[in-house]
Structure formats: C-alpha cells, structure tokens
Image (cartoon, rainbow, N blue to C red; front, side):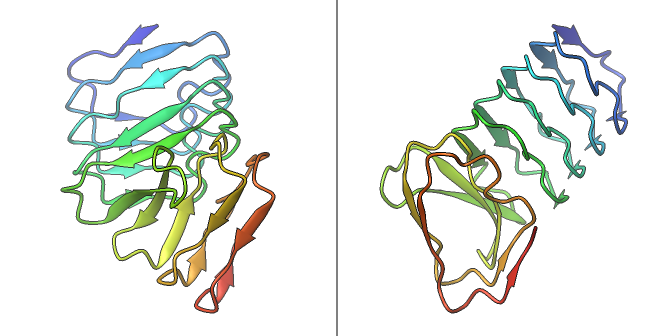
Length: 171
C-alpha cells in the first residue's frame, strides 16, 4: 500500500509501472493528472480511488491491473486517453460521477450492475468492463465510435450487437 504526500500534484507516466505487489494507493486530492502507463502491470492492485481534482487520465494508465474490479471517475475528469483499462481482466464496473460534464457510464442493459464508460453524449464507447457477467451486449444507437481496446479481455462476451450508427472501430 502506498500513500502519496499531500502536496503531490500529479502521477507521472510509468510512475508505478511494474509494481506487481502494490495492492492499494491513496491519491491525495491535489493530484490533477494520472500519466500514461502510470500503474501499468500493477497486477495486485485491487482498488483505487481517483479523487476529485483529477482532470486527466493518461493512455493505458491502468493497463494490466489484473486484480482491479471497479473504478469511479470523479466529476473533475475532462480527459481520458485511449485504453485506460486495457487488460484489466477482472474489471466489473466503470462508474462516472453523474455531475461529470465530459463522460458518463451506464449499466449493461441486461444486468444493470456492470457499468460501461462513454463520452458524455454517448457517441463514443470508451471501455466495457472485461469481467462483466453478461454474454451479450447491445451497443447503443448513439455510438458512432468504438475506442481502441474497448472490449479487451471480455472473455464472457460471445455476442455484440453493433448498430448502423457505428462508423469507426478501434484496434
């Protein structure tokens, strides 16, 4: 477990990359950014609280955090880069504070407990929780872009219904 100093302003790219025994981290409210690959490969990280004040979550910030099961994104986040939760094979829910003006999350239509991450107007599907209990997902009609790695490690999914509105699919 790590507790960052209260005067910490940001978490640099790769700061905790490869810290395989890190199980939790206390991020102080003064932090405004989480850099690219900041927690890459922290396979024992089971929980993280992203505090109000964080504005940016870098590319693949939590990539391969295999024990992470849920995350809550505060209202202050204005920028989430590509594939923030790629390889988080036990992720069940990605919730966004309802007052966030840039992003939103919605439950799976079938289950209601596993939250999917979108941009605010739901034109971009950013991340689907890899360990959702669902075997089928219907992408909403509002979606035009499916982000890179959005469905990475979603092993239980055997069917995705994609509407005609989708014009771009990432890697």
